[in-house]
Image 1 (tube, rainbow, N blue to C red):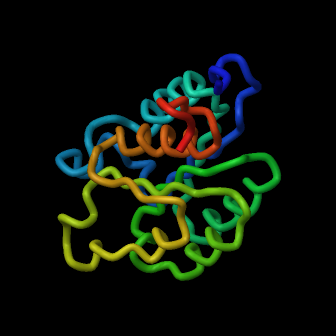
Image 2 (cartoon, rainbow, N blue to C red):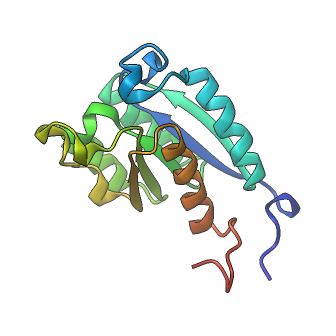
Length: 162
């Protein structure tokens, strides 16, 4: 039997937001919603706690800062939920950083990148990730946390953690 999330020590994970996500709530709310980054982070910390995860959040606009955050996460986190923002479609360096770390990364996007402009319909980073979730607004992050928790053995499912 899988222990309940509350019965075990919380697993530390990083939720990492990429460029322009600091503008949530004001930037194109018809695409990205009206929730601010601070409100999103509060929801993710609470949801993580319910899943047995100790969620830390960070946001960086620079590609190098995101890569450094991934490298540093290896020292303390057991997984990452990442929204690479626009770097999804352009950054081989970010993809290599994801592939180069020994912890799982789940890619998330607020919008459905496959229903947007042609240049957004390709993810360079997704192939290095455990999986990718897009199109569910802020709940994409929530689904990413659930997926990561399941992968780390903290999301009981009928018949075990598959």
